[in-house]
Image 1 (cartoon, rainbow, N blue to C red):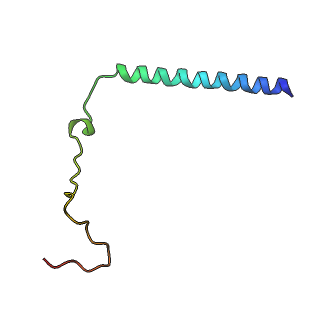
Image 2: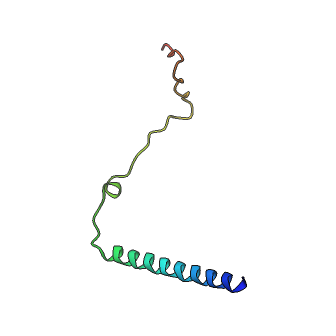
Length: 67
């Protein structure tokens, strides 16, 4: 039984090292590709948040406040 555990652990280490090597190779290939701007890099996403002194929007189903 002990020998079977050793073989399984060794096989898992070998598979993990192959996966890491494959991931490193993919990362190197992507770094060699020409740099092009994507939409996310060209224009940052801006989120407009309410000011701290403004109240939150009313929940669905509640009447809107009159101004």
